[in-house]
Structure formats: structure tokens, C-alpha cells
Image (cartoon, rainbow, N blue to C red; front, side):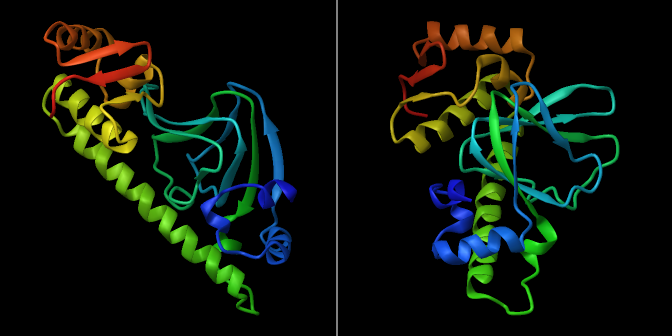
Length: 220
């Protein structure tokens, strides 16, 4: 319980610590640790659970009917997951949450969160409002990814993605949120083809790279 009191998770913003402790019990909160590489759970069937990341990093991956894996998102401490997928099982397309490194997560029952108790507590309504804001923010992020994927060429996909990361960092230099291999998966491009395109962009003076650090040399 003290983990939530010390967290900066938006889901519990503006909720009094005393009320938060009551909510933890009301929402059937339960904490669990996972090891690197361990699958937390799969959304290939109804999973009415919301996870709050206390520590560590997790990957959301989609595995299609043919077993191909695509990176959907990387989530870190204080992020939540499951709020969008709780009622969105898709046959033949399993979405899994996998630990990038050792993780500690608190799970809550989704139904109990979105349906206020009989007392209609203010703190519960605040949590629902916070959840809607977080869901809206995630929908915007997914919309930006659709924009990246809709680009016709690998270069356009990269520049579109780099542009967004530059805006987020407030600088033309930024650090990728994941590895180069994951970047290829994220933009749905062949890794070798993407690396060739990055090499061309460096030679043309468009970008500089150092491991996961990217600097855009010209304005987009």
C-alpha cells in the first residue's frame, strides 16, 4: 500500500492517502513481482484487470495468427496497462504484457474501478476521471503511431517518429525509448532495410546516431 502512496501515478492524482488506502481494498489490489522475460498475462481472452507498474519496464507485444511478433508499446514505472484492452480480446491476435526487466506490479479489478460503489465516494469518482484522462492520452499516442505506420516509405516512417520524439524531448537530440531492433518492429519495417536507410540518412547529414541517441541535423 505504501508503494501507491509514494508513486506519482496519475490514476491516483488528487486522492487523499486515507481514501487511497480504502480504495486499495475496495478495488481488490494485489501486488506481484515478475522476472525479466516473464509474461505477465495475455489479452487473447477477456482479462478484466488493470496493472500499475511500481518498478521496471514492460513490453506490450502483439502476436498474430502466424506467430509474428510486433512491438506495440514500452511502458515504465507509474504507467498503467490493461485499461483499453480489458474488453477487447481479438481472436488470433494475442496481445501480451512481457517484462523487459524485473518488475513489480499492482493489479486492480477493472469492473470495480469503473463502477463506483454504492456510497459513490468522491475518491472513486476522481479515479474514474483520472482513468479517462489516461485513456485519452494513450489513444492520442496510438493515433500518432497510426500516423507513423501510414507513411509510405521507411524514411518517412523514421522521420515521422523522430519528429514526435523531438517534440517530446523539446530538443533535436533525444534518446530512443527502445533499441534499434525494437524500433524496426515498432514501425513495422525490416530491420536490415531500416538500418540501410538510417545509414543513408547519416551520410546525407540528416541525422547523427550514437547507440540509442539520435540528433536531427535539419528541421523536418
